[in-house]
Image 1 (cartoon, rainbow, N blue to C red):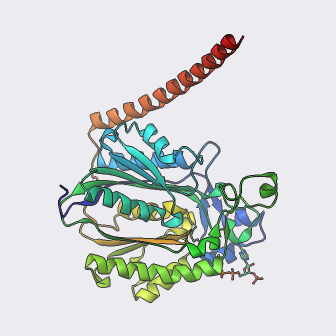
Image 2: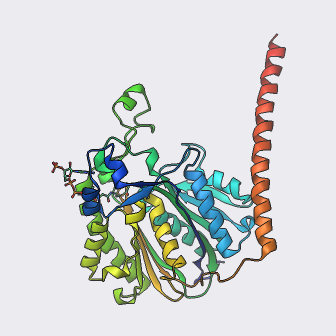
Image 3: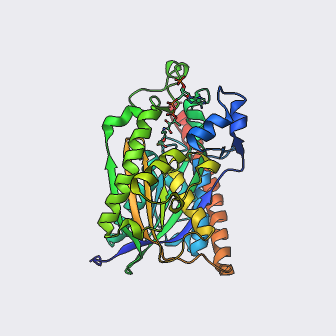
Length: 381
Ligand code: ACO
């Protein structure tokens, strides 16, 4: 029987931002835009873009390994891995399964969740619910997106807004009065066309025509999304606080989806909360979609802004349309010293073993397929 008060506590956190920095000035060299326009309308100064060979899974794995390191946790203790993404490495299999494999998390179930930029807070809610049910004790929640793979680099209205990255948190069951206090999910599919990648799915299949018409790139009605975002951010924040029995005065930090500083400032004004109670890093990374909330959380914990006992609101909005919020009482101290070296070594060995086993299995599977083909040829002859 699950305990009535069982909830999820965040015990580890990690992030991955690609090394390559792309400034507004660089974008303005190939697009009809300017550093001034982008800064003024969005607050974005630069963003990170993946290098050749990097993708959603590789960033997710880096963030996940950091989260396990911070919690000094064994990957084999994971029960469930949820990856929020709308830019998976492949349509199939799920990114989460690839992350599970790279971590050597032999006992974990794994699935992807697509709720656009709200994805991480959606996944956090699923992780909290899984733990509260009593069926799972340790859940890894990741938000990861490679937006550079889906923006139309010729479209100045969207190309300047996005960046790549990943963030992860490790959830563990607790019976104390901290952790995830309340959550809220919302969706309004009537707004589907406001933020959409039209082609490449089952409705509009990839073809030469869809490529020629640039239908595999993200399309957005910026003004409508702006209106939606400035309404939903404060509404969702207030509703999730009400559910947690907290007043706005009790909130130490709001960690919103990082799409645009103007949206965050408008939300702060509507909530009558000072802007310095919002964690904002959109200037440095642009909109990293499902990764933006965990990256901002991670930075604020690492630089000491978030302290044990503080109340946080994590709030996202995005394609769908969707929105999600979570009220969290932070409990975990930033690890002060080095982790136990034998546990570090065992994680390292597990990652190496997982990589070796993958190569071995792929080799064996290919060999079996070849032998099978030869066998068929021999029998049919
Ligand atoms: N550089 C220069 N000019 C530009 C650019 C650019 N990069 N982009 C648009 N413009 C032009 C437009 O063409 C327009 O010109 P016009 O007046 O001659 O027609 C002018 O600038 C004003 O365009 P608006 O769309 O009205 O500009 P606005 O002030 O609304 O800002 C923006 C646009 C930044 C996109 C804003 O609407 C916004 O932030 N919307 C929300 C976007 C968002 O949050 N998206 C993500 C949500 S969820 C997710 O993350 C997937």
